[in-house]
Image (cartoon, rainbow, N blue to C red):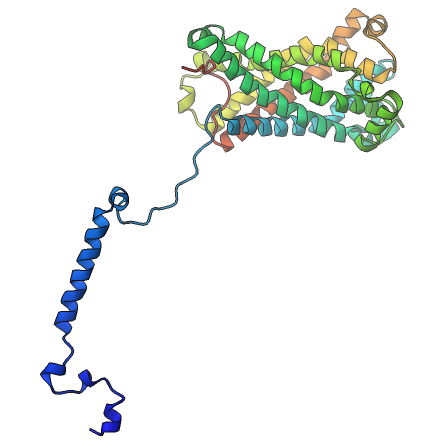
Length: 362
Protein backbone atom coordinates (compact mmCIF):
# COMPACT_ATOMS: atom_id res chain seq x y z
CA UNK A 1 0.00 0.00 0.00
CA UNK A 2 1.22 3.50 -0.82
CA UNK A 3 2.90 5.15 2.18
CA UNK A 4 1.09 8.46 1.60
CA UNK A 5 -2.28 6.71 1.93
CA UNK A 6 -1.14 4.71 4.92
CA UNK A 7 -0.41 7.93 6.79
CA UNK A 8 -4.07 8.91 6.54
CA UNK A 9 -5.38 5.65 8.04
CA UNK A 10 -4.80 4.48 11.63
CA UNK A 11 -2.10 1.85 11.58
CA UNK A 12 -4.00 -0.69 13.69
CA UNK A 13 -6.58 -1.03 10.93
CA UNK A 14 -4.15 -2.21 8.28
CA UNK A 15 -1.05 -3.41 10.13
CA UNK A 16 -0.27 -7.13 10.01
CA UNK A 17 1.78 -6.95 13.15
CA UNK A 18 0.16 -8.65 16.13
CA UNK A 19 2.01 -6.32 18.44
CA UNK A 20 0.42 -3.28 16.78
CA UNK A 21 -3.16 -4.58 16.74
CA UNK A 22 -5.76 -2.83 18.86
CA UNK A 23 -6.48 -5.00 21.90
CA UNK A 24 -10.31 -4.97 22.04
CA UNK A 25 -10.46 -7.55 24.78
CA UNK A 26 -8.23 -5.46 27.05
CA UNK A 27 -10.36 -2.36 26.38
CA UNK A 28 -13.55 -4.23 27.26
CA UNK A 29 -12.04 -5.48 30.51
CA UNK A 30 -10.90 -1.98 31.44
CA UNK A 31 -14.35 -0.50 30.68
CA UNK A 32 -16.10 -3.15 32.79
CA UNK A 33 -13.69 -2.48 35.64
CA UNK A 34 -14.36 1.27 35.48
CA UNK A 35 -18.14 0.71 35.44
CA UNK A 36 -17.94 -1.60 38.47
CA UNK A 37 -15.88 1.00 40.32
CA UNK A 38 -18.47 3.70 39.54
CA UNK A 39 -21.36 1.58 40.81
CA UNK A 40 -19.41 0.69 43.93
CA UNK A 41 -18.69 4.33 44.74
CA UNK A 42 -22.33 5.31 44.17
CA UNK A 43 -23.65 2.53 46.37
CA UNK A 44 -21.36 3.66 49.18
CA UNK A 45 -22.76 7.21 49.03
CA UNK A 46 -25.35 7.64 51.86
CA UNK A 47 -27.45 10.05 49.82
CA UNK A 48 -27.67 7.83 46.76
CA UNK A 49 -28.08 4.67 48.78
CA UNK A 50 -31.08 6.13 50.56
CA UNK A 51 -32.79 7.31 47.38
CA UNK A 52 -31.68 4.70 44.87
CA UNK A 53 -29.90 5.51 41.68
CA UNK A 54 -33.00 6.73 39.86
CA UNK A 55 -34.44 10.02 38.65
CA UNK A 56 -37.33 10.89 40.94
CA UNK A 57 -40.65 11.91 39.41
CA UNK A 58 -41.91 15.37 40.35
CA UNK A 59 -44.12 15.30 43.43
CA UNK A 60 -47.84 15.88 42.96
CA UNK A 61 -49.23 19.04 44.48
CA UNK A 62 -50.95 18.31 47.78
CA UNK A 63 -54.43 19.36 48.80
CA UNK A 64 -54.95 22.41 50.96
CA UNK A 65 -54.34 21.58 54.59
CA UNK A 66 -57.36 22.03 56.82
CA UNK A 67 -57.27 25.02 59.20
CA UNK A 68 -54.22 26.48 57.47
CA UNK A 69 -53.98 30.10 56.28
CA UNK A 70 -54.40 28.78 52.73
CA UNK A 71 -57.63 27.04 53.75
CA UNK A 72 -59.07 30.19 55.32
CA UNK A 73 -58.03 32.20 52.26
CA UNK A 74 -59.77 29.67 50.01
CA UNK A 75 -62.93 29.94 52.13
CA UNK A 76 -62.78 33.73 51.81
CA UNK A 77 -62.53 33.46 48.02
CA UNK A 78 -65.41 30.99 47.94
CA UNK A 79 -67.51 33.28 50.14
CA UNK A 80 -66.74 36.27 47.93
CA UNK A 81 -67.78 34.38 44.81
CA UNK A 82 -70.96 33.02 46.37
CA UNK A 83 -72.21 36.28 47.91
CA UNK A 84 -71.10 38.69 45.20
CA UNK A 85 -72.57 36.68 42.34
CA UNK A 86 -75.87 35.78 44.00
CA UNK A 87 -76.69 39.23 45.35
CA UNK A 88 -75.89 40.79 41.99
CA UNK A 89 -78.01 38.17 40.24
CA UNK A 90 -81.13 39.06 42.24
CA UNK A 91 -80.72 42.83 41.86
CA UNK A 92 -84.18 43.16 40.19
CA UNK A 93 -85.86 41.58 43.22
CA UNK A 94 -83.82 43.76 45.55
CA UNK A 95 -84.79 46.95 43.69
CA UNK A 96 -88.51 46.13 43.98
CA UNK A 97 -88.16 45.11 47.65
CA UNK A 98 -86.38 48.33 48.62
CA UNK A 99 -88.97 50.47 46.85
CA UNK A 100 -91.81 48.55 48.54
CA UNK A 101 -90.19 49.34 51.89
CA UNK A 102 -89.64 53.02 51.10
CA UNK A 103 -92.84 53.85 49.19
CA UNK A 104 -95.54 51.24 49.98
CA UNK A 105 -98.31 53.47 48.61
CA UNK A 106 -96.76 53.34 45.16
CA UNK A 107 -95.24 49.85 45.27
CA UNK A 108 -98.13 48.02 46.90
CA UNK A 109 -97.10 44.42 46.24
CA UNK A 110 -94.63 42.33 44.28
CA UNK A 111 -96.50 42.20 40.98
CA UNK A 112 -97.48 45.87 40.96
CA UNK A 113 -93.98 46.81 42.08
CA UNK A 114 -92.47 45.14 39.04
CA UNK A 115 -95.10 46.77 36.82
CA UNK A 116 -94.53 50.28 38.15
CA UNK A 117 -90.76 49.95 37.89
CA UNK A 118 -90.93 48.61 34.34
CA UNK A 119 -93.31 51.37 33.24
CA UNK A 120 -91.33 54.24 34.76
CA UNK A 121 -87.72 53.13 34.32
CA UNK A 122 -87.72 50.32 31.79
CA UNK A 123 -85.62 47.16 31.96
CA UNK A 124 -82.51 49.04 33.06
CA UNK A 125 -84.35 50.16 36.18
CA UNK A 126 -84.26 46.59 37.49
CA UNK A 127 -80.47 46.63 37.54
CA UNK A 128 -79.89 49.92 39.30
CA UNK A 129 -77.24 49.58 41.97
CA UNK A 130 -75.65 46.41 40.60
CA UNK A 131 -72.09 47.78 40.96
CA UNK A 132 -72.22 48.64 44.70
CA UNK A 133 -74.06 45.35 45.18
CA UNK A 134 -71.32 43.35 43.49
CA UNK A 135 -68.42 45.07 45.24
CA UNK A 136 -70.08 45.33 48.64
CA UNK A 137 -71.38 41.79 48.90
CA UNK A 138 -68.19 40.30 47.49
CA UNK A 139 -66.29 41.97 50.32
CA UNK A 140 -68.94 40.95 52.82
CA UNK A 141 -68.92 37.33 51.64
CA UNK A 142 -65.16 37.06 51.89
CA UNK A 143 -65.20 38.30 55.49
CA UNK A 144 -68.31 36.35 56.47
CA UNK A 145 -67.27 32.90 55.28
CA UNK A 146 -63.52 33.24 55.78
CA UNK A 147 -63.74 34.54 59.34
CA UNK A 148 -66.55 32.14 60.21
CA UNK A 149 -64.30 29.17 59.48
CA UNK A 150 -61.52 30.83 61.47
CA UNK A 151 -63.65 31.71 64.51
CA UNK A 152 -65.36 28.31 64.49
CA UNK A 153 -61.98 26.60 64.78
CA UNK A 154 -60.64 29.13 67.30
CA UNK A 155 -63.63 28.86 69.62
CA UNK A 156 -63.54 25.07 69.33
CA UNK A 157 -59.91 25.07 70.42
CA UNK A 158 -60.75 27.29 73.38
CA UNK A 159 -63.62 25.03 74.42
CA UNK A 160 -61.66 21.79 74.01
CA UNK A 161 -62.76 18.55 72.29
CA UNK A 162 -65.48 17.60 74.79
CA UNK A 163 -67.19 20.98 75.05
CA UNK A 164 -66.70 21.76 71.37
CA UNK A 165 -68.92 18.77 70.58
CA UNK A 166 -71.35 19.35 73.43
CA UNK A 167 -71.89 23.04 72.68
CA UNK A 168 -71.33 22.99 68.94
CA UNK A 169 -74.43 25.08 68.19
CA UNK A 170 -73.18 27.86 70.47
CA UNK A 171 -69.85 27.74 68.65
CA UNK A 172 -71.63 28.05 65.29
CA UNK A 173 -73.57 31.05 66.58
CA UNK A 174 -70.60 32.77 68.21
CA UNK A 175 -68.35 32.19 65.21
CA UNK A 176 -70.89 33.51 62.72
CA UNK A 177 -71.72 36.57 64.85
CA UNK A 178 -68.05 37.46 65.21
CA UNK A 179 -67.46 37.11 61.49
CA UNK A 180 -70.50 39.19 60.59
CA UNK A 181 -69.32 42.19 62.62
CA UNK A 182 -66.26 42.39 60.36
CA UNK A 183 -68.35 41.70 57.26
CA UNK A 184 -70.78 44.54 58.06
CA UNK A 185 -67.99 47.08 58.33
CA UNK A 186 -66.87 46.03 54.85
CA UNK A 187 -70.40 46.12 53.41
CA UNK A 188 -71.90 49.26 54.98
CA UNK A 189 -70.55 51.98 52.62
CA UNK A 190 -71.66 50.08 49.53
CA UNK A 191 -75.06 49.30 51.02
CA UNK A 192 -75.63 53.02 51.60
CA UNK A 193 -74.88 53.78 47.95
CA UNK A 194 -76.96 50.85 46.70
CA UNK A 195 -80.13 51.82 48.57
CA UNK A 196 -80.02 55.44 47.42
CA UNK A 197 -79.32 54.55 43.81
CA UNK A 198 -82.21 52.08 43.81
CA UNK A 199 -84.80 54.22 45.61
CA UNK A 200 -83.95 57.84 44.71
CA UNK A 201 -84.34 58.46 40.96
CA UNK A 202 -81.66 60.82 39.71
CA UNK A 203 -79.44 60.48 42.79
CA UNK A 204 -76.60 58.76 40.94
CA UNK A 205 -75.98 56.26 38.17
CA UNK A 206 -74.03 53.84 40.32
CA UNK A 207 -71.05 53.35 42.59
CA UNK A 208 -68.55 55.61 40.84
CA UNK A 209 -70.62 58.78 41.24
CA UNK A 210 -72.84 57.75 44.16
CA UNK A 211 -70.01 57.11 46.64
CA UNK A 212 -68.28 60.50 46.26
CA UNK A 213 -71.66 62.25 46.28
CA UNK A 214 -72.52 60.88 49.73
CA UNK A 215 -69.04 61.68 51.06
CA UNK A 216 -69.29 65.25 49.76
CA UNK A 217 -72.73 65.80 51.29
CA UNK A 218 -72.38 63.95 54.61
CA UNK A 219 -68.74 63.03 55.00
CA UNK A 220 -67.41 59.50 55.47
CA UNK A 221 -69.71 59.15 58.47
CA UNK A 222 -72.64 59.28 56.05
CA UNK A 223 -71.53 55.96 54.60
CA UNK A 224 -71.80 54.34 58.03
CA UNK A 225 -75.06 55.96 59.13
CA UNK A 226 -76.82 52.66 58.66
CA UNK A 227 -74.18 50.52 60.41
CA UNK A 228 -76.16 49.96 63.61
CA UNK A 229 -79.34 48.71 61.89
CA UNK A 230 -77.15 46.82 59.41
CA UNK A 231 -75.55 44.98 62.32
CA UNK A 232 -79.02 44.44 63.74
CA UNK A 233 -80.12 42.91 60.44
CA UNK A 234 -77.04 40.95 59.51
CA UNK A 235 -75.93 39.44 62.82
CA UNK A 236 -79.22 37.61 63.51
CA UNK A 237 -79.41 36.73 59.82
CA UNK A 238 -75.91 35.26 59.75
CA UNK A 239 -76.28 33.45 63.07
CA UNK A 240 -79.42 31.82 61.71
CA UNK A 241 -77.78 31.22 58.32
CA UNK A 242 -74.81 29.31 59.70
CA UNK A 243 -76.30 27.82 62.85
CA UNK A 244 -79.43 26.45 61.19
CA UNK A 245 -77.55 25.31 58.10
CA UNK A 246 -75.02 23.32 60.10
CA UNK A 247 -77.81 21.77 62.17
CA UNK A 248 -80.08 21.00 59.20
CA UNK A 249 -77.29 19.32 57.25
CA UNK A 250 -76.19 17.33 60.29
CA UNK A 251 -79.76 16.16 60.94
CA UNK A 252 -80.24 15.28 57.27
CA UNK A 253 -77.24 12.96 57.23
CA UNK A 254 -78.12 11.57 60.64
CA UNK A 255 -81.82 10.82 60.14
CA UNK A 256 -82.87 11.23 56.50
CA UNK A 257 -79.91 9.99 54.46
CA UNK A 258 -78.98 6.34 55.07
CA UNK A 259 -75.46 6.70 53.65
CA UNK A 260 -72.74 8.39 55.73
CA UNK A 261 -71.65 11.75 54.33
CA UNK A 262 -68.12 10.63 53.51
CA UNK A 263 -69.53 7.83 51.35
CA UNK A 264 -71.88 10.11 49.39
CA UNK A 265 -70.76 11.55 46.08
CA UNK A 266 -69.64 15.16 45.96
CA UNK A 267 -72.56 16.09 43.70
CA UNK A 268 -75.00 14.60 46.21
CA UNK A 269 -73.33 16.49 49.06
CA UNK A 270 -73.67 19.73 47.10
CA UNK A 271 -77.37 19.01 46.61
CA UNK A 272 -77.74 18.65 50.37
CA UNK A 273 -75.88 21.94 50.81
CA UNK A 274 -78.34 23.74 48.51
CA UNK A 275 -81.43 22.23 50.17
CA UNK A 276 -80.12 22.95 53.66
CA UNK A 277 -79.19 26.46 52.61
CA UNK A 278 -82.64 27.17 51.20
CA UNK A 279 -84.34 26.04 54.40
CA UNK A 280 -81.93 28.12 56.46
CA UNK A 281 -82.57 31.11 54.20
CA UNK A 282 -86.29 31.13 54.97
CA UNK A 283 -85.52 31.32 58.69
CA UNK A 284 -82.94 34.04 58.02
CA UNK A 285 -85.45 36.21 56.19
CA UNK A 286 -87.95 36.11 59.04
CA UNK A 287 -85.57 36.96 61.89
CA UNK A 288 -83.73 39.75 60.05
CA UNK A 289 -86.58 41.45 58.22
CA UNK A 290 -87.43 44.21 60.74
CA UNK A 291 -83.84 45.43 60.68
CA UNK A 292 -83.83 45.23 56.89
CA UNK A 293 -86.76 47.66 56.82
CA UNK A 294 -84.86 49.98 59.15
CA UNK A 295 -81.74 49.91 56.94
CA UNK A 296 -83.74 50.84 53.86
CA UNK A 297 -85.60 53.62 55.68
CA UNK A 298 -82.53 55.22 57.27
CA UNK A 299 -80.38 55.08 54.14
CA UNK A 300 -83.17 56.69 52.13
CA UNK A 301 -84.04 59.47 54.61
CA UNK A 302 -81.31 61.96 55.47
CA UNK A 303 -81.23 62.72 59.19
CA UNK A 304 -83.85 60.09 60.09
CA UNK A 305 -83.59 58.01 63.27
CA UNK A 306 -84.72 54.53 64.28
CA UNK A 307 -87.56 56.14 66.21
CA UNK A 308 -88.72 57.94 63.08
CA UNK A 309 -88.75 54.65 61.19
CA UNK A 310 -90.76 52.83 63.85
CA UNK A 311 -93.23 55.71 64.07
CA UNK A 312 -93.81 55.84 60.33
CA UNK A 313 -93.78 52.12 59.55
CA UNK A 314 -95.39 50.85 62.75
CA UNK A 315 -94.41 47.59 64.42
CA UNK A 316 -96.59 45.49 62.12
CA UNK A 317 -95.17 47.15 59.02
CA UNK A 318 -91.67 46.80 60.40
CA UNK A 319 -92.05 43.02 60.61
CA UNK A 320 -94.19 42.33 57.54
CA UNK A 321 -93.65 44.97 54.84
CA UNK A 322 -91.93 43.26 51.90
CA UNK A 323 -91.56 39.98 53.83
CA UNK A 324 -92.98 37.52 51.21
CA UNK A 325 -90.63 38.84 48.55
CA UNK A 326 -87.72 38.75 50.96
CA UNK A 327 -88.46 35.12 51.88
CA UNK A 328 -88.41 34.21 48.19
CA UNK A 329 -85.28 36.25 47.63
CA UNK A 330 -83.32 35.15 50.70
CA UNK A 331 -84.32 31.48 50.46
CA UNK A 332 -83.08 31.26 46.89
CA UNK A 333 -80.08 33.43 47.69
CA UNK A 334 -78.93 31.45 50.72
CA UNK A 335 -79.42 28.05 49.10
CA UNK A 336 -77.43 29.12 46.05
CA UNK A 337 -74.72 30.68 48.20
CA UNK A 338 -74.15 27.48 50.13
CA UNK A 339 -74.12 25.52 46.89
CA UNK A 340 -71.50 27.80 45.29
CA UNK A 341 -69.43 28.03 48.46
CA UNK A 342 -69.25 24.27 49.01
CA UNK A 343 -68.65 23.67 45.30
CA UNK A 344 -65.61 25.95 45.48
CA UNK A 345 -64.40 24.15 48.61
CA UNK A 346 -64.65 20.82 46.80
CA UNK A 347 -62.82 22.33 43.82
CA UNK A 348 -59.82 23.29 45.96
CA UNK A 349 -59.82 19.99 47.87
CA UNK A 350 -61.69 20.95 51.05
CA UNK A 351 -64.72 19.05 52.42
CA UNK A 352 -68.25 20.41 52.21
CA UNK A 353 -69.68 22.20 55.25
CA UNK A 354 -71.79 20.58 57.94
CA UNK A 355 -72.59 17.13 59.38
CA UNK A 356 -69.65 17.16 61.78
CA UNK A 357 -68.95 18.97 65.06
CA UNK A 358 -66.24 21.65 65.05
CA UNK A 359 -62.75 20.19 65.10
CA UNK A 360 -60.97 21.13 68.31
CA UNK A 361 -57.25 20.96 68.87
CA UNK A 362 -56.06 17.83 70.62
